[in-house]
Length: 176
Length: 288
Image (tube, rainbow over all chains, first blue to last red; front, side):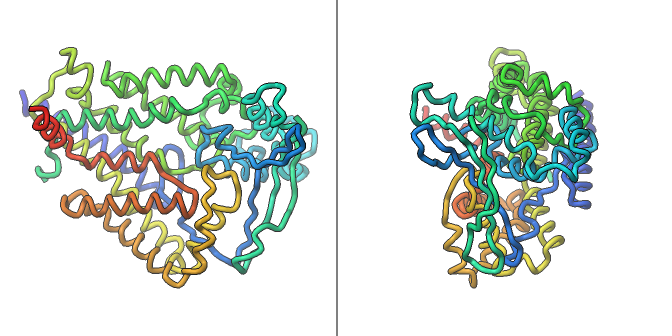
């Protein structure tokens, strides 16, 4: 009886092992993440000093007239480790380039006449509005620390040297 | 082989509590209603998440929709952490966590921190992990059996998954970047890039010191690659295990301070290498 039960578990564990490792081997072979099948390709390409890189800083302008830095992790902590790539993908309009596009994005594409006619970061104002409201909701209505404007400033790290890290490129501003 | 697959119901039960408990704590401190306020128009469903229609995401991604989802997720994780209705609750937790992790990856990128823990949930959903260290056991609904293989193999499988994470990561780097990965500028460039914005979770600035020591960095990167390649040794050689895991803890802390990138789930999963039977014996000895 015991042997029979153990044999059943051996069969079950063999299937479980194959179900887990076969997709992992496939992901590894093709270096492709197809959720939930994963290849651990973190930092696989390495850094190259000659390649220019752009990055963003989230800031707010308070009612009192002060400009402050805001960390998105304090607003949307569900996206820990991912807020920066969400911004990058939104700047490059990635959500308009899917095989199945959201109906509201389809409507916008029809209005402007295609992806190529979209502004850079078409949906960034929507994201900024959400972040601005989340920030203000933490404060009393009379607080001078409330934001009247939230903005995303984009900079470039000029390539080729360990200096000139902050060449200003552009900014998105949303009035709250 | 028997040496590696021997284990107890207690070890497997504690492992279930650790893995489910890690997700439970993370869910408790996460604002799902804030996530529900993000515009659905920036969502990019990834992999399996593509099978769900847009009107499903439209309904879910609201503060009330995400609050309801969080409540169900918390309940299932609570049950699986404490081991009540274990074979049911571990499967429900697995499904809900897979969905949630897919959702956050559909906003950002495919980051890898939680993925090993997700794979551990897959294992735990299909093994007898509620036979001990569970409410099911303490209420007399489940009994711990004798077979060490039945309880030991799942632990070996989870240890092998962790070894695969590091080993395959080293192989992929060598396949994609080759010897270029050992260039003196690799680490400083990556570290500085991840320290420039304020969109990362932390704002450590140690990366800007790295160019001053760039001559030694190829050796540092090389040591990390060798450590990743040798990680599977932690399964078979118990004496080396704590050195390998200790290096891992230092490595993940270093990526936090140098690159503002941290893998807390991955570190929590190191507990899979703890011999919980010995810990139990030690606790009992101290009691008596």
